[in-house]
Length: 481
Image (cartoon, rainbow, N blue to C red; front, side):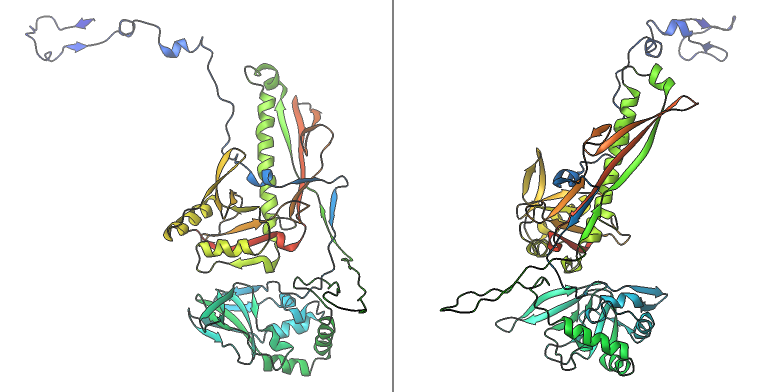
């Protein structure tokens, strides 16, 4: 240690007097090679490039994939007689709410009605009203004198049980309608009571207002006649053309003749695609390829991103995504907001052989909370070597591609899968040129004048719902803790 002092000033110990400094010499402080210098000669152990976007992608694993050689898959179904019962839409300006006139065609009587001008006039006759929780809008057995369109909120349909107790028959929510019998049956009676489960807004059309419009509109009268003629078709409870049969007869009874009719315009699902161009400079590929292949890892992460996008599209695409293509009659709303055991059972009961639930991880946590409040604990099942939460033995697959609204609500899906089960299937085409994975190809596009190598990475996919009840959706699931 080198110490510098001022000559002539004695030092008797303790703190150095003023003017005395202690200055360590850099070379004298270190007695061995430092780590910073040593690293210049060391081979660093590295991880492969990491990526937060990668998930388990359970939906891609769960769907049975069907080969589509011609680029399209046609779903042939038994003939169904469409009766509407879709969702009407609304537009809001400040506190004023109006029904979007063309969507009135979702009311069974007005399905395929051609006169847009008359629909606009009819839409103007709906009046908005605010309802409070517990408010009674209709009583069972009373005349149906108005049509209700639910702009916002939930309404309960209430019946009477065997011993006079009140029973919950179902619930309707945003976009649903009640009382359309008033438009075609002057003596129709409410088969159930209607009570507001939450605060909300409904639009009401008095039967008298519709009747006045009918009396001066020949087109509307013809529409009513066409609807009456169409309802004479014998259909089963699913709306399919009835197959006439005879059973339990004795003697020589004349047997009915029948045939199974098919849809004349079945739906075709064309394969969608996700693509990108991966670019890698030749200098990088040539000089920096050890110990890890740069092109290989660039391609690996690009493929992961494409697969993530593929799963997102299978859930959210407006043409073939599961949320968009689920039939309206297979959509139900939660009873109180959070996903209760009653809601999960209700969703499960609407189809046979439910194979999977599909839910956002936060929705799965909410299911556990609600079950715990009742002293229930969801079981777990093993799938692909991992333990997953299950309900009634049906695995709940986590999927963060299911959207969560600003109001902290989301949806939970239940689905039956496989062609043999008339369920949901994934569609793809394999055997592509330069195939890298099943249904995904990587094509060399050349090297440009800047020495950049380009690869076209493409994947082709879609999904098909073979029959409407293969997918059900529990909507308005409140996941706020």
